[in-house]
Length: 77
Image (cartoon, rainbow, N blue to C red; front, side, top):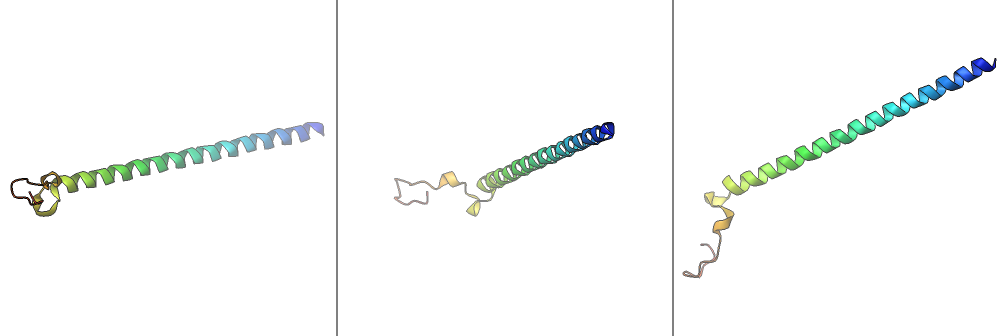
């Protein structure tokens, strides 16, 4: 009788450790997916900003060309 009870206790401990392992694995996988999604979002944002600043500005001018010109006194360059 005691042998059956001990076996049940050991099997329940083993099942608990297995479910904890699965829970940890799912948590780790979710955190990796979240990190990958954040990295992808940051790369996308930086790519868009870089593309916009280099190629997509108004009238094809780069942002650095808008400086104050001392000869004309205008801020358009």
